[in-house]
Length: 639
Image (tube, rainbow, N blue to C red; front, side, top):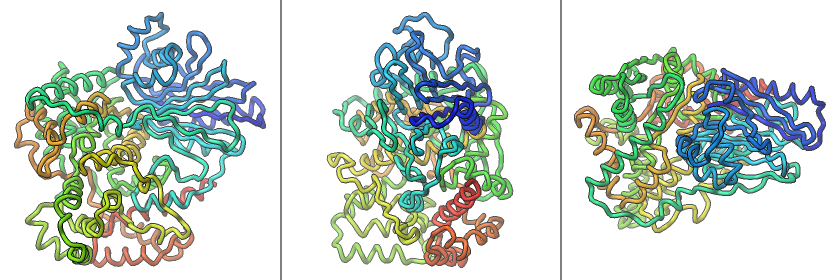
């Protein structure tokens, strides 16, 4: 695990010393991603500079140093991540080997088989920059699920690329030209959907793709080439096998995926929330470990948000060495000023705060942690799948006028009235916020529109960002295979968008800010292929998802310890914004400061008033504006 950065100066406008100084400054911005070692390398006649910061996980010796040169000397590699099947590749490639790092194996695999064939065979998480000294060709590649980040773009005649935008910003040629369309997309979804970034001239490389610059022209970006697409995998023929055999095979796959992710030359532990996914990962880790696994969790004093007691009960049952931290509003307030530097782009998933705090606590004990991310997307765990299924299938018979009437009731019912009369009967998952999303979705029967509505916080963000046209990939016709069931189409959309640009961004930036590597056993291509190779009802039926994950988990943990309504990794945002965070929020939401950011204050002030008077739960919409305001002010200070 590491961070890397590079620049390709086609005009050659910097001297050797200036170029090395630029590279040093850029690499230093990534020290948190790699505190153990640094490597700088130049190809002077090509104008190419490569910088690397290393967090030593495998092969702690100098033989794991990067940038790494292939045995032949033809290729130079920057590699961020882990290859979990490196031992099999090593045996096939033969050797000899300088050390035992997976980076060396990845590099020799690329030289032997070519970039595309090699990355197709990699089972892992990675972001790669590869320089072919013979052909003067620069290539980038990213893992199947997009667990490791990769940014790139032109600053005049200089191609900048790296693990985080802050490293690119450190180059003297960088210009901070904001993309107002991306800003509006952020307000809709609370993250900037790829391949866009908040800056007009820079992109994120899509998950499961690679691209190559050979004889590049300044400003021109080649189209990425997809080498792994979950939509293709999802349309493969379903395998019909008995339920018991399916559960046995999934358990074996997960055991192997977990075991591979426990290979490290440094201390290792796991996040444990007490939910299905993290509990299963910890159970599988403990089965293969002779010593108690180190587990870590975050708790809150506020009821309805605290899963720490459940995590503690799971830890006691499995016999782990458990550590927990209860988060106060004061601790959250201390994290908020750090968010612009941690995430580089505006990012407003409220669970970013506890994710950072649990990562910081975990790093005090271990260098690598396993997590349960990916279980909801692969096995149908989100509540919105049930809602979407109802809208697209079971409510389809309702006449249009009646649907519109029900939608109006859902959107206009005061939150207190809804909470008092219905939530107690249906459970927390049917909050008034979700009722309003349901109302918006009822107004249409189109899949893309319904899904987009369920994922949106601000439904019309162009009203907030004047002149913006926030119509990215969520509006692309034919993005989803229409022959799939609605639930599976939503699962695929989440895998392509929400998982890559929200969940995995949150975990990567929060953990790496503390120099902690996080690995995800559920996000194994083999697990994905197996789960999607079975009929939907093996994982999801009658509104209940994760059926097979539950069946595996019950082999290790009693049902009563995990059977409860899904809570999610949230924070008491509403209580905090009305309480200790209120002065901070009110200061950022004044009309003058909103206008200074180029935002329309009217709808924002209306949302703040409705929230302050307890008339409408707009805290998540407001949080996205607050995060954007704070990020914009930090961005202006950096210019």
